[in-house]
Length: 121
Image (cartoon, rainbow, N blue to C red; front, top):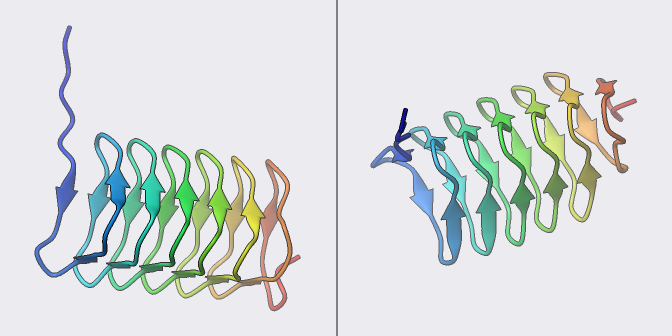
């Protein structure tokens, strides 16, 4: 059966230039996406989350409320960025990763791990 998934952007979200959203992606109120951003299919960018410039998110990525993803970051598929966490600039976060709430990611994160704390380990 053919299935169509809507891509939804709340009117109170801000999207800069050259932002590409995958099928089924949801951008919540207060979310801020700067420029040159590529989001895969079925991503969720929650309330007041920020995605910096030149960032790529894989499919099925969730960025929880008030999380901050700095510029030039790559995030793999099926990864969760916890509420009020920060991923610093220029890093890669692998697929199937969980970044705990309030964590500060200061180095690359390999696939399939959970990191938490400040700095995230």
